[in-house]
Length: 170
Image 1 (cartoon, rainbow, N blue to C red):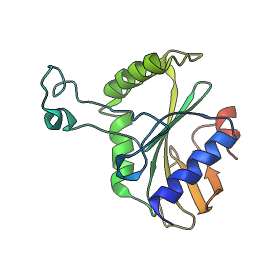
Image 2 (cartoon, one colour):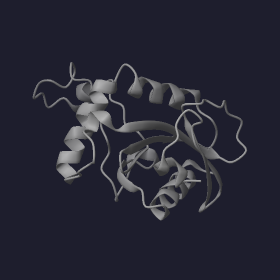
Image 3 (tube, rainbow, N blue to C red):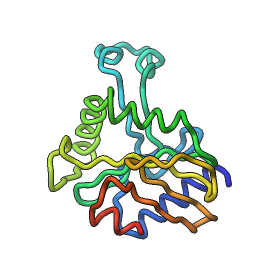
Image 4 (cartoon, rainbow, N blue to C red):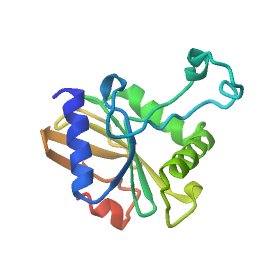
């Protein structure tokens, strides 16, 4: 399957289970439905310089961000397992977590999204989406969307996390 088909299928799957899509970016950077969540490096983006290339250095943009109650999914998608996407998710949740929280607060304010908990207290679950049957490691802290065909998606929840929101994806 192509990356855009995987992306479309995961979006449809989440919507059908009452997840609120809050940010996303289709492959090649185009999206008519959602704004992108731009996780910026504050050291590079702290002035009013018109040099957009400098501001995009060290910027991270997840493929899809979805919210249900106090659980937030950050999803990266490729036709097969991507080590670089896994590393990107780990960076977002590790060294760049402060930048993630700042970007989420700004986006939530812009979109007027209210949550039952403060943004910094959301349960953030990293996820990867790929063609079903793709060889991948199984991290206990990651969720996996296995796309068998357009609109045919299965979700494997992280074994280290058990919430009603994640159960709704099973």
